[in-house]
Length: 108
Length: 359
Image 1 (tube, rainbow over the protein chains, first blue to last red):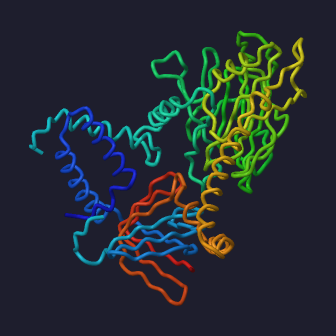
Image 2: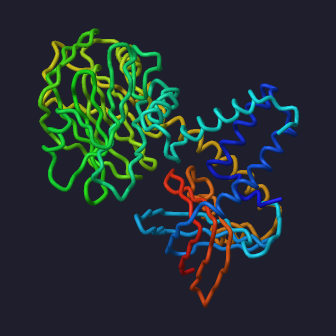
Image 3: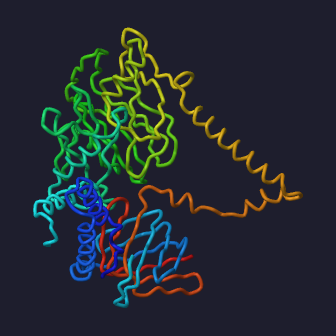
């Protein structure tokens, strides 16, 4: 089992919404939907590890930090995200980071 | 997957999923126009009473990129677009990186240097409204009034004239209340910047100025003629008579106070709630001798900005894994990897991210 971390992204949320719609119209079972989400977790983890190859730098001020159950949660203010090509500025950003070192299979 | 699922259902899932992704506008669509159409359809479902512009899609670091969204006319199968509306009025938004209509080009050229339009709205009457982002980041809506349209039920297209910038309206600044608005004839688009501008959303609101009596009817007519506006926009009626010839009767302003006032109602409700809470607190305090004044004092110690932050609508989120998190005094260093970011509504990915922050 891979991290279920990526379910709360645009990709993940739209998938969950679509699955919910199908469940409501009874075209699939909730069990099947769960399987789909687990497949999604595997796929997204693999894709990010293998198919993405870019680097980002960021700088800002740290508002809050939290480390619980080996998950870091930060809230930063006035952050600049810099890639080679461009720059994105945000007033506030929340960063949720799971442990990337071990092969642990924690949920979320 | 042979878990009893139909292939058909899987295909349907895929379609649903892709549609949602396109609608979110957080990812780049396969076809830009298709994406625009979907986005337009989604926004068309909003309240008819409000006008809403297309959210800015251009990358913030490309201010020179003109944003124009093409909306199909109502005669087509696709439902009328965002700004819409009613029968005859047609708002054309042309979305392409390079294409601009002749009038739009002229309008752009006429803009002061350093200012580039990132959104252009063209009404059926040929009136061009440009939302422009100046160098300092302030947003202006420039109205280029066309030939005046008589106040009649029918819409008379004014034709596309060479747009002339007559006036620059009050700058739109995020979070600041706007006092000025532009009242145009019912067939035109009225711009009344709202109190709050969320993100890149522009607030446009129709204020009716009609020579005909029966303001409610006119307001409804105008509202029908417009799309959706930001919910927090306030209706400000201001007459700008300069370029607009008066109708036979003096224009009737949209009345927002008196019977039509809604703001005081909200205040009253808030006041009522507040009074009830106060009473409850006083009851509790009454039971503890000598602490009636201390509790309110202590309650001021709480620095609760958490609520404000968590009530945010589009929170920028980064979901990733951490390689190393380091701290020295109050200097933090982040080494992250394999992340998906949603910033300002758009999605980004990274395989590595390194960051610095001071706490």
